[in-house]
Image (cartoon, rainbow, N blue to C red; front, top):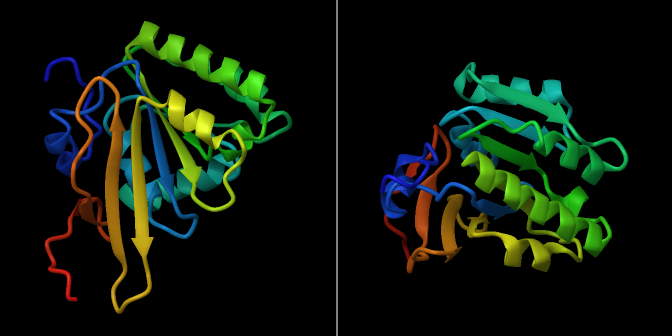
Length: 207
């Protein structure tokens, strides 16, 4: 569809009729010990990206991106981790250019803010995304979610939920899209291989 921005992950874009509508907030939830950052780096390569880090340093993010897929042009990394991170993130959002990505990795420290302050941040973010025709990806951790996680889930237009199963002889990654505001959520999960880029895992499950 012409009114969608590709995620840069072809296996998802085909399922999502071309990508994500401009102006959307996408919430990506995953385990801390998973390869969820692979999804972030693929999205960052799709178009100009402002990567806001709240935990790792700017250099650590750049080094990780370089190791994953080499240099990504039009990538700006900014550290919002100093106190208070939500004020820093609010200031950085205003620098987001037209038709670009905003990645917040991870959003958990922002969710620890006062609920009214966090709600104002999300609404300001949504307005700026609509005005610039951009999308935001909020990367969140499954374990010990802050109290404002339900607010993030409600405000998000699209939700990607990555589950990583390490119990068997193989590591299995399944991506669910339970929410897609203004479109159709996926009825089935997608089994992904995250070892070399992001591809469909065609191996069969053994009962």
